[in-house]
Amino acid sequence: MTELEKQFQSPMVNLLLSIADDKLFLGHRNSDWTGIAPILEADIAFSSLAQDDIAHASAIYQLIHTLTGEDPDQIAFGRTENEYRCADIVTKNDEFNWAFAIARQFYCNTFDFVRLQRLSASSWVPLSSLAKRLCAEQAIHVDHVHSWIKHLGKGNEDSNARIQNALDTFAPYAAMLFEKPVGIDILHEAEILTDHSAFFVSWKNSIEPTIDTAGLTLNIQQDELQGGRSGKHDEDFTQSLCELQEVFSTDPLAAW
Amino acid sequence: MSASANVEVNIKDCETADPEKLAVFEKHISDGGLIEPNDWMPEAYRTLMLRMAEHHANSEIVGALPEGEWITRAPSLLRKLALTAKVQDEVGHGQMLYEVAQDLGKSRNAMLRDLITGVTKYHNCFNYPCPTWADICMIAWLIDGAAILNQGTLAHGSFGPYIRTMRRINMEEAFHFKHGEDMVLTLMSGTAKQKKMAQEAFDRWWDPSLAFFGPNDRPDERERPAMKWRMKTATNDELRQKFVNRFAPAAMATGLVINVCKKDENGLVISATPDPKLKLNEETGNWDFTQPDWDEFFKVIRGNGPCNKDRLALRRFSYEQGEWVRRAILDGSTEKPCNN
Image (cartoon, rainbow over all chains, first blue to last red; front, top):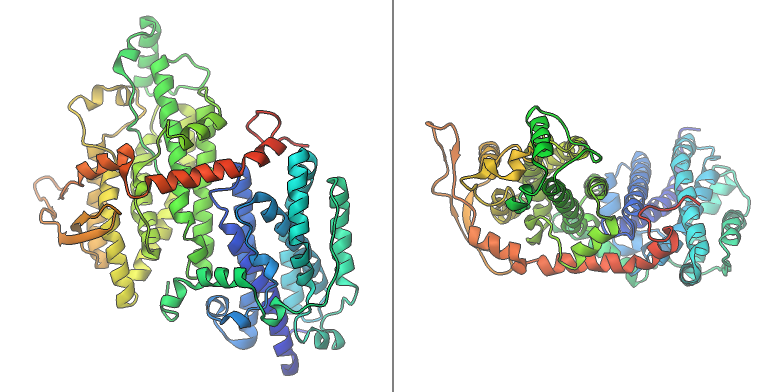
């Protein structure tokens, strides 16, 4: 199926926004490390991951454009706070603490990989083909960050304690990644999204072996709270959005 | 982004080398030969080359800081991606240049420590403020443009690892310059507000761009070790003139005005008047121009510029906040991540 019937467009846009906004703001947060990461080689790698995420977001905003006709930059930069659909873990302040940045990246990158795999099975071809393409790069992100978790978990006592603390601190926010985008059930019922398996369980199964190898523990529960996916954001998101829009909002119609 | 061949070495040091070996070494250089890390070289050459590579590497990673601060505020998806990639390139240049310097006998960690404790320096142009998005556009256009001119000549130097690195870096700098030029042209063909923003940033960056090449030449410039040993192949004034010849007409073509500016202690312009000397000199074929404010230049180089303290503080913060990570994953005191 290459055409999406009109009644499915709004839930699809909402789903696409949740993916693109996650990626945009994760890339936005991580790009802030460019130039100040703990090791030059890690700096360069982390910046590449940030660029991938922003580029992925851009490709998804482009897909939304094919449905709504809206300009991708206007979608990315021009909405009000409650119109963004990301989970707030992506904008959680890492205080330039590398353990926090890695924990956030670990949860989010693995989540994105599992999510993209599920979307690769969509019956709407523009989505499934884009998801397949992004999945290939996402797999590199997953490899990279899982290797960091192992390095820090097994590094020394201090690094093990720091990364464990970071994983525990970010766990409640990671659980919020699973908040359902409004209207996603409609897409499942219509078999536009065809993978109905348990998302949280797949994700947990993907991260647990690395956690075990690293000598760490995973303390996370699924919950049913409403947050970013419903447009209810916290202060860290507000701050990130202000920064994102600082120059753009001086003249939203100007070319930059 | 920036190379400086203006680090100094005491000429007397050159005289302590074995005269026969020195003669062979100098002939090899004057015949156009390259020096490799394991070749014999006078200690003064090693010292000067190490300082050059280290200063250049320091400049790359400190240069990443002012631009890095604008990544999260870049106003479109394309600009955000391009700026992140550009700053990442600068860090990559730093990484390559620290490798070159390491081969001359100083560890990366020692170089990073010396940078944050103020023992070594970085390029002066990064001690100026970037209060608007347009400053980022001007840095990429003017400073990267200046770096390309400078590094283009350094790529004909005599130390093999440095010139090979320089060639690689220059290819990336060419992209940075294009990225800068595109941003400046976009602003200058935009709204009145954008044009004003661009002119104000240009006023802040014209002087540091002229000063980028270092102080005026000394009478014995060509006899000094850096040029005698072909580490440097053009003088500061030659490069500065080349820069003005290229950028003065290019700036005017976009509608920018080249001003002589007075700045306050924060590096912000308090008065700007069109450069009275600016004109194409038909006799020489060069553009005449007003020299940058050298008093200000030396004040900034001595550590009293508008942003010296901020830049160093952020670099120090980065070094300190990453210490536990390096302890955990680097194998003892080695410089590279271990593989297991």
